[in-house]
Image (cartoon, rainbow, N blue to C red):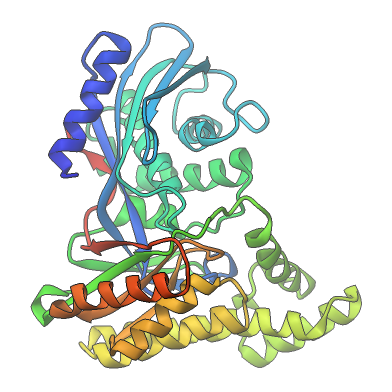
Length: 406
């Protein structure tokens, strides 16, 4: 759906549910990560961009301490509605998708960004970011709701303050980690708040630095095709946490805040060997896990320099290498994702890789604009031949981060 259609839909949902017009409508985008996967929590470097597909939140303040929330998310046949006490939004108080929506309010209060006394809100949510696709539908919900309540409480200019946006990013991360229980590293929330049209965002998590990187697909006759594998995808089922657990434990054993802070690849390998021996952990697995992280950080830095020099062929080669590392060393792909990448390579795509946390979700392909439809058809046929559920395809355009839209 178009942005105008989504805005009209969320306004209509709000009015139908609450009998009044909302104070405003806010949006936050999904994201796709071009390269730099499973390294955000290791102090690494990532290169995501914000999608034009967004989650939209219509919101108004209330006079009491109740929060009412309703939503129509992808796959819902009718609105889902619930309500809760505004003072009971923390860990153990709420669960499921409501944790993504309301957890940031709790985290913003805990951080002092919002007033500590509970405030009530009416919220309606409509999303065009596919759930479970690996395009960060969760961060889009977190950042859209967080942006709405911040502007309702702090004023219409508050989102223009970089420090407020930084506090929103931290609150969304804390909500997902502490309220929902998904051990995410911050990439998704950072790009949802910081995206710019026509750019990807270099995020250096060790040094806390970001840099906008021009990503002019149209000017080079290129396109990013997102392929949703339709394989089930959830980061809260333990697989993501188990990968991160190894990385965090090796860093802690070396008394470093993150794996990257240990040093170069040799130092990281030595730390992993020492940790695995001490803990009785499978040495081969430990070495492969840290090898992915250290090589992916180097690969991402290399890929960014290639992109800044318009070397898309070299960038595509790094995409393929990233997928191989995620498949072989980090073991987070599934057969559907591998089939997409293998088919893209055989077709002649410039680059392809899984994107997101893995274990399902989506892959991306960097292709010439005229190859979008032929490659889509080739992948669809490969899925049919393999007896997989049909994939879904989405054209990706680098777009803006969280903002008020009505």
